[in-house]
Length: 271
Ligand SMILES: Nc1ncnc2c1ncn2[C@@H]1O[C@H](COP(=O)(O)OP(=O)(O)O)[C@@H](O)[C@H]1O
Ligand SMILES: [Mg+2]
Image (cartoon, rainbow, N blue to C red; front, side, top):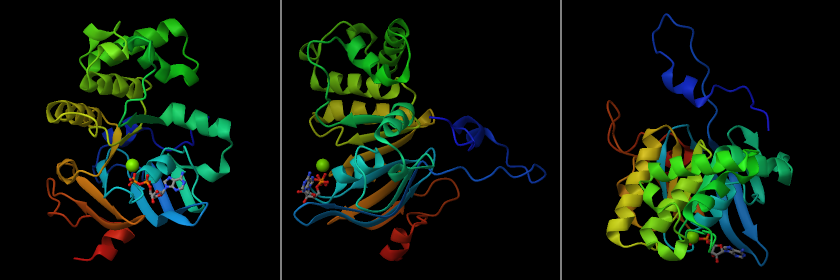
């Protein structure tokens, strides 16, 4: 997968804003859904005409009740599945135009996943589980393991590297899964109900780690049915019956309180 020539995260985030400097071109959105729909055989419309733009560096929640289409959204945003209507661009790439092997490369290079039930390999220790996050990147094994140890240190589990999943608590398993997701330095991290199987204290640690990851420059999308978790994040995209019903942002710096959302969906939700 070759880069498209859009500005890198580093350049986009550090470009000066002086009027006498040549303007930097607008960065390509990390996620761009236009009229994206997903119908399953049997007539279930899990997603209906979803329009969503997520810019580099955002931290957002996709929130809604069970069955509202959130996991379907995660699969579409993560290129694990293709929409049946509309277009999806991830990091500027049109997902429908890519072969399965190119999609795998896109995922390996740009996207990290965290799931409710961790999806760790049983019988493999934490280092190897995290190193697996680099399997499709061509990094040699020794280096994969070294980077896995660094990633475990970032989730403060360096002392648990040789433990297998059955020797770890739920919260620790999810931290291993986060380390696996971040070891490849993805620009986008997608988390589907990351605290859904955890007690409150472990869930809070997981959310704190996701915030740290966001603070280091990663775009983070947390999918949740939990309003409390969503309300603590700066942008909330609310789903009902497969459609976006509101898209709100909390005020930050000079932004006004909720309502800075710029999508069609935000306008639809009205003042
Ligand atoms: N593979 C599938 N085949 C048929 N229907 C599905 C499939 N996956 C999800 N659905 C249906 O799509 C709707 C949205 O599901 P989902 O995206 O899992 O919602 P959520 O994650 O918000 O609970 C539900 O009605 C669900 O039953
Ligand atoms: Mg779900």
